[in-house]
Length: 133
Image (cartoon, rainbow, N blue to C red; front, side):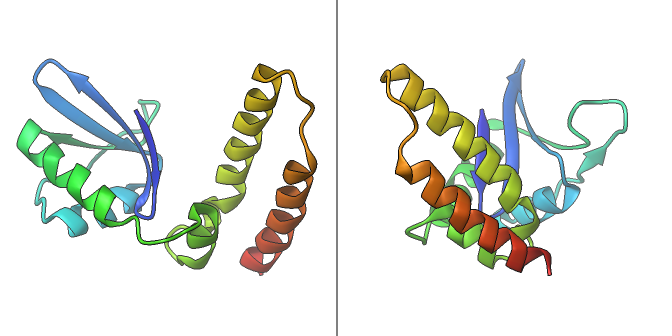
């Protein structure tokens, strides 16, 4: 499962009886640990598709789920990410995912992408320019 949150971008998978919470940025896992109180060490490797990971049991994963849901305090995810110093560098990447999935939706519905995508592209371009300064 992919999760984009105010704490970062995570991939969570289950292998046997353990859960691996994986991240591209080790800092994201450290933010998540701080939010949950989990004390386990983040492991890192240059030889895996996700650079950093946290290995958890089912009870610890419940703490992660609770922290992630409690972090939803905003009406607009991309705007929130653009405001968070720990996350704003990801905004252009999240915007690309949003655009790709919007395109998927419109093709599924046999529609051409509407004014909305152009609107968000322009708005995000302005926000990305501000965030990169």
